[in-house]
Amino acid sequence: MQRRTAIKLAGLGAVGSATLYGASRLVERRRVAESGESYEPLGSVEIEGTADAVSSVDGSVAYVATTTGYATVDLSDPTDPTVLADVRDPLGDHPEGPLREIYDVQVSGDQLLVVGPANPNTPGPQAAVVVDVADPADPVQLGVFETEYHIHNCFLDGDVAYLCGNEMDRNPLAVLDISDPTDPQEIARWSLLDVESEWEPVDPLLRYLHDVWVRDGLAVLAYWDAGTWLLDVSEPTAPELLGQFGHYEPDELVGLSSSEVRTEQHALPGNSHYAATDPTNSLLAVGREAWAVEYDGEQRGGPGGIELYEINNPADPQQLATIDPPETPDPTRGGIWTTAHNFELSENRLYSSWYQGGMMIHDISDPSAPERIAAWRDPDEVSFWTARRAADRVIASSMGLRNATPGLWAFPDRAGQQADRPPLE
Image (cartoon, rainbow, N blue to C red):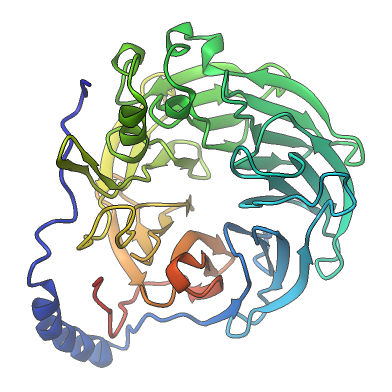
């Protein structure tokens, strides 16, 4: 198995970190106490099964995927986030229902898109559900679009829905018209195999369409080891390729054994997991979820970070910087997770989640030199799935990984330092 980029071990060199931390945390606590810059959550609410979360444009309501359903949360008082509605077992009246493994929801205006199941071979229907959330306390199901594939992630842009259509063959992007939300209709499909058939012999797990992001006619597709693909979707019925970049050529991934495929799935390089643009569509961030794995008696790889690219010319993206993940004493999937997960870019800030590594805010006014201005973690209590801006604050959802508390946390959108930052042990 040949790699174009050397695999680097990450998360090592942590011996003695707890001792060093004990001395440094006292200095840090004193500095924070003197400066008044202490950074802590404003409030939180526990929600069983929490996965991803998004916010309304005005930041007053959060919408949360809860694995067995979805929830709406009042954020008007960030010190006391309050669940408005907790809908469980959608499509419960379906002959094969209910809908399960709901990891992603997306909101646009008064419509919420709820999709699942997130993984293949999950019993029950496979579908995208359109919900009216004009009254967030009383969601009303409007329409259902059933699929022949599981739906790990999606995006909602006005009256157009974009689904990751991984049927484990062509793994296309499916585009739906939901202008009549009671009767969603598929209007287009696009697969990387449409433009580069050389990827067809590669195992579908390594060219898996993990996520999709859309803004102002630009779609960004995170195709795992097949890289990141940029499409013009200004005409949603006819997506057109603008550019693509990644770490591998197709022939480097052809003919791998099942164990080699599993290694490639989890270890760097590659692993285009989540991507999003800033409001101008000139800056792109690509997150690379990854872990260290055992292969041929060696530990390879480690947690992935977030890379920043200038994409004024989508056909020729230019990498500007990399934000490294927090170090972890155990970078394997069975260890302490600090790899990048979901995030959001604003005009000059990046809000990011790193599982047990916590949440962070970076100043990216100079994207070639991102500066971390705030961070918070509590690895025994939370494992953050996403971090997003919600008006003048930040929300971060925590999954119940290894007895962590599932739910939604609200933070101030400002610089600051956690006063008593716990170590990752």
